[in-house]
Length: 270
Image 1 (cartoon, rainbow, N blue to C red):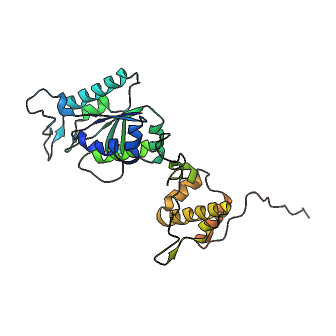
Image 2: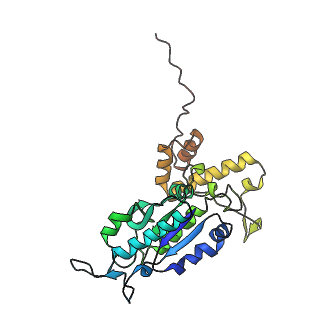
Image 3: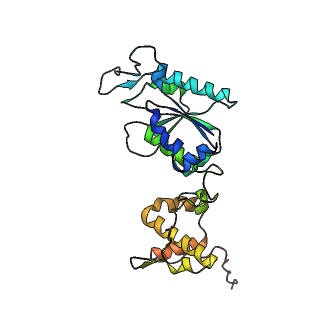
């Protein structure tokens, strides 16, 4: 997987290229990173990449030409490696909300070109001509797209085979389909007792089914308390079984739902 980044601050991306899980994956050749500075595609002595907005207003707007030239250079670099043209992704508050499913989808492809905006915004003509996708981390505004792009890259690289020490680790993360899109359960390690607080007995039992049930119950409890909308999403997707629904009912003080597997016998006609 090759990631190209269009950014005024290429040095910021050393964080994912050199450190931690993403740094090890990069060193192993599981993914590559190429940063392109729009200032390198300007023709004036000041390397100007922004100008005042038409119509007035505060702030400056990034110019279309340097950004488009940087995208063309990135696509040419990909072609030189025998790769197909990549989607051009703008980090933008109007974009699709980035989530675990999107990260996994990216990891299954050959990469993307991430465009990191700055100042008040980007010339819309560049967006119309070059951008194929827009994504957002949430309903807040950053000084630029770089921090958001780092998060996008990190989440996607984790899914690459071999990136994590245990291949199943990413599948056990919160929001993953293997957890029915729910939050992950709490985790514990040595010592067995810390400041008077012991590891839950279920995790010390060595009974795999009992441990799995405890983790599922805790996942349901935590998700219901912190992100109840994820419960409804899992229900709509058909990811919750009868045992899950009974546990949720118990947590809310409700009557358990009838078991759909047990058919009610009709009374014989009089």
